[in-house]
Image (cartoon, rainbow, N blue to C red):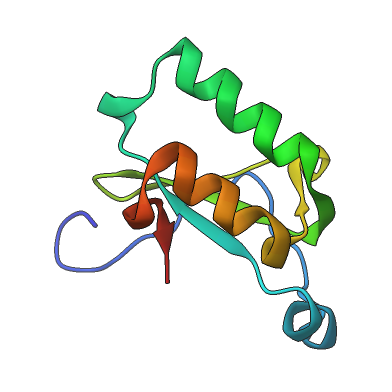
Amino acid sequence: RRDASPKLMAQEISVVNIEELRANPPLRLRLPASSLDERRLDRLKAILSEFPGESTVFLDLGEGNVLRLNEQFNVDADKVIGELRVAFGHGAIAG
């Protein structure tokens, strides 16, 4: 947001299939950038890779910075949540 009106910047815009979104809701992780180091990032990659699926993963880094992870990190949201909570805490799962 700059000036009085909001602005939107994007690298890519695509049409969302609502039925697919309902069947595979996205997973939003809240991991502040200040808490991420190489070890934690490697752990995150390992966990996401262990539970492949169709749900897109969004990484909320704080301060309005949200990243959509590459499709190779799509997960089975129902199966991965427990492992993510153990590794990063209950508050890591947003929503």
